[in-house]
Image 1 (tube, rainbow, N blue to C red):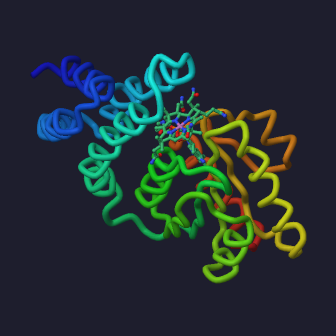
Image 2 (image 1 turned 135 degrees about the vertical axis):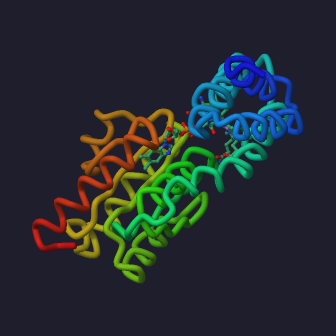
Amino acid sequence: MEEAAILEGLKQAVLDYDAEGGASLTRQGLNQGIPPLRLIDDGLSRGIAIIGEKFQTMEIFLPELMMAAKVFLESMKILEPAILALGEGKQKRGIAVIGTVKGDVHSIGKDLFGTLLKVAGFEVHNLGVNVHPGKFVEKVEETGAHIVGLSALMTTTMPSMREVIEFFEARGLREKHTILIGGGPVTEAYCRKITADGYGETAQVGVQMAMKFVDQMRAAGRG
Ligand code: B12
C-alpha cells in the first residue's frame, strides 16, 4: 500500500472509530518502514484534530470522542515499542517527571512526550493524569529529576500548571528544576505569564528543550 494511503487510512480509522482497522494499518505502516512519528503526526493526529472540532461544534458527543481516542490509544500501544527502539543504546541524559495536571485526564500527548524523552536518554517518571501539584514536588524530591513536564489540554485546567509552579516556589525548589509545559491550549505567552521555563508546541520541541536545559544545568554545575 502507498504511504499516503496508509496515512489517510489512519486518519479515517479515527474518524470511523475503527480501532481494529487503525491497529492493522499501523502494523502495516511500520512493516513498510514508515517512521512511527509520521504515522502519528500525518495520520492519527489529523483524525483526532477533526474529532476535536466535531466535538466542539456538537456534531459528535462524549461517547464518540471516547471511541476515537480508543483508536489512537490502540495504535499507540503498537507504536510505542517502535519509537522506543529508536533510542536503544543511548547514554543516560537526565531524569524527568511528567504528568497531566489536576482536573485533566488527557494522556496521549503527555505520554508521547514521555516516550520521546526516553528515546533521548531520559529516565522518565510518568505520574499519569489528574495529578495533584504536591505529587510533582514529591516525585522530584524522590528522584532528583532535572526536568518537570506538565501537560494540560483544557483552558479550564491550565491554571493548575501555575499551581504546580507555586508548590515548587513554596518549598524553595523552583530554581533547581526546569519546568516545561505543553498541550493544545497552552501558548508561549502563557508560559511567560506563569513563569514556566519553556513551552513545547510539540513533544519533539519539548524534548529538544529538555536536552538543552539539562546541558545548561550541567555546565552551571547544577546537574
Ligand atoms: C482525545 C480527546 C479526549 C479523550 C482523551 C483520551 C486520553 N486518554 O487522552 C477523552 C474522551 C477522555 C476526552 C475527555 C474530555 N475532553 Co477531550 N479531547 C480529546 C481531543 C479530541 C484530542 C486530544 C489528543 O489526544 N490529541 C492528540 C495529541 C497527540 O495531541 P496533544 O495532546 O495536543 O499533544 C501534543 C502537543 O500538545 C504536545 N504536548 C502535550 N502535552 C505536552 C506536555 C509537554 C511538557 C510538552 C513539551 C508537550 C506536550 O505533544 C503532543 C504531540 O506533539 C481534544 C481536541 C484537541 N484538539 O486537542 C479534545 C479536547 C481537549 N477535550 C475537550 C473536552 C471538553 C473534554 C471533556 C471535558 C468532555 C466531557 N464533556 O467530558 C473531557 C475531559 C475530562 C477531564 N476532566 O479531563 C475540549 C477542551 C476544551 C477546553 N475547555 O479547552 C477539547 C479541546 C475538544 C474541543 N474542541 O472541545 N477527550
